[in-house]
Image 1: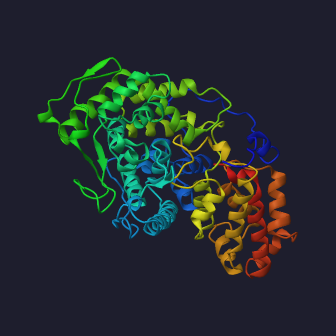
Image 2: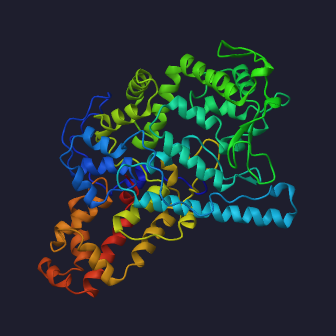
Image 3: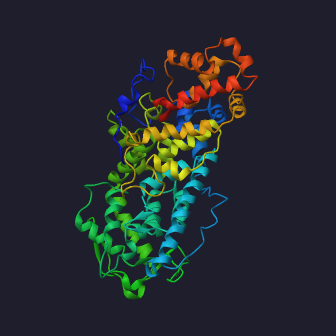
Length: 521
């Protein structure tokens, strides 16, 4: 990311109430037992979806955390695939890298257009979603199993990226080992990390390394020899990308080429994978007897490392990206529970999000929104359609399904820089500017408290900020901005009209989106 990173403490100083009598951070997975109130319901919704609406918060007030998380996670066996998809997802082209320059530029230009459309389609899906919260999980997995649309002067066709998102949707709460198996043979991943180039004559070790370093165990739990042996297991897989190339399993699917597979015995993490008789060197048998065995060994020998590594990744994305406290004990307990659940994701997510730790004061309002969360949040909070989605994402340094490196996006405090913060504010301000006076009046009338200026200000701020500002700042918001220095009793008449009340509403909203607290969730 370009621009100077802003220290979070400096960023927030003076804008929020100091927290008095902070509860101690819970170190265990013990369930949160208090009924959800407005603040805790909003906290859960902010972290497990893209932004809460008033109606959503009201629906969750009074529920237990376990009940609320069950609703938000939904049925783990239901894929919840979208019913309306982009029209280009099945279109095919010739290989642009074997064509003339004019044809290549034309095809690549079409891909860039499709990728832009894919980002807009996905953001609109996020904005329109209520419960269960599927797309937040898909967003997380997209940053865990990273794939870049543009890399090394080449592109991955967006048709393949669309299918990858569908795969993430399918496995979002399933068994993690099965998830990793499908990722291993995913067409986008095979292209991105060179798996389709991995042959018995010229092994490509990229995916074998990242399988362990970035996707399962983390650094320090494997040797260079393990990387080489894993790469040998993964030889022979190809991708059907173009209409002038083989597509044995259909276009945009992977397939196996037996002549490129290493049939000799392998040694991985101290265990053997037997040699293969050429007569049994088939796609089905190599997948079920070698790739699956590779993952069985990995998830058995390195079960503790995998469980803690993934628990830490979930913590960083959903809880706190850069905590100033030691969360090791909680993450280790999550890892132990994950192993006990045989790497089933649903129980892990359910336990983590309904834990006392998740509702600790140290967690609420501590995370900086990603650009995706900001754009979705502005649209949902203001109930306003947003435009120019790819351009706004890029201005905030997030291009969906095109991270800067194989490691994905950096910790969330890096979202705020001297370059991106003004762009974040500008985006929200532009949305507010697009309101007509009549639309602003209609917006505030969606709040039950619209005729009470003090309560109305508080309700809007509570929806926009995860932590309430000081009473002094609330009074400024009400008296000087919303009321435009008019007496409280004048508001009832002001809101019956248009111009004066709209001026106050616009001033209030512009002040809210400029407050650094608006960047938190």
